[in-house]
Image (cartoon, rainbow, N blue to C red; front, top):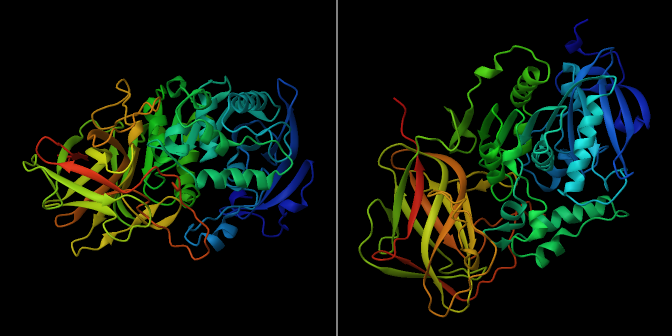
Length: 564
């Protein structure tokens, strides 16, 4: 009987019907109907310090040794897929179809087991029924992952080849353990995962993120109320600079040598976007591929098209199947035109070598962006405090006179001063407008549909550049000391704008927005936020931006020339 025809004659097993130990279950899959699967629930694995980690193991219901796919997170290894619940408060989550045995952001055993893989779901220490304290992204957690990989590599049902897969937290843990190069780890699929906690999650340009971070921590305390969980929000307040607290959680991405299939998104700016590109760029892996989309995170991960690409990669590196995976272009990315409309482009590397970086200078008289330096000096002021109805931002525009693709990092150089305080928080947005003057909305973090092209942030006291790591198109800040403003002091700053890709057709416009608070205000009647947020800004009164003459304020954009 064809295994993919499924067994409609068998009664499906609900996860609540499983018990610790060996379970022979019938799993209703999204793609292959009802499938007979062996589930070993709550398998204990003792760590080096005596703490026991628990995992769930899903295996093909037949003899043999198989490669292992695994993921690790603190969310709930026994949890049902939460997306139907999310949709009630986040109505735009998207279409996500899995088996009932696929916890949040996790590989679905309903896809992998019928394709002759073993799937292992690991509960981090301090989560689910695993012992110990929950301290996310620490060396302790990473060492646990290493030990589970090596345990899985020598089990009687394992052929010794282990791969990692998963979204978000499940990708973040991959970067860290892959940098340790466990002997049985043969390939990884980090699908949208922050790699620099300080710069990409807890602080944006030095501005503390205060909404998503608190929600993440509240979720852990709500789910595991009896466990000891690290107070990361308190630590964020105690460690506003990039000190040992954050360094302990850093990963040396250049230590990664294992083959990797990385998926990044233009749409998870403010969390995963930057770090996924950095993971791909900095890894030393000889065999590495990058796929970039501009759509919704979970919906894209569970698409059949995505699953088949993941499977082809693992078939090659875990099973040794000659399937022409090596002919896959090293970089594929979606150039966005509008919501869920774009084109796939192919390149050999990231950043794209043939990028032509072009300066667009701020013209304060016409509120435009100009190719040539602007001669006349202007000073432009805006009300920097949140909730300003009038003069709350500055907007500069350029209109394309031919089709132009912008793909990569942008950078904004500004000359600025604060009238009423010694520091300032700057929020930067890049927006697209059609030929009729309507804003073109795009998917954005977290699954919202009124998003923009790209974002940047800066707390001006954090403006000191790390000159060793910065490039002409991507400023990297040190975050080691505060450089406060003196009264009437005008200073130059460079603001990193996160990677993006947009096609402007002739007559369409790009608009630069400079503001003192969030640029996109989420309108959710339920009151539940899905966004990042920055509720503790240093802003008071007005900010001034200087352009023209000796003030060479400009937006640097990455133009991709047409191929012959």
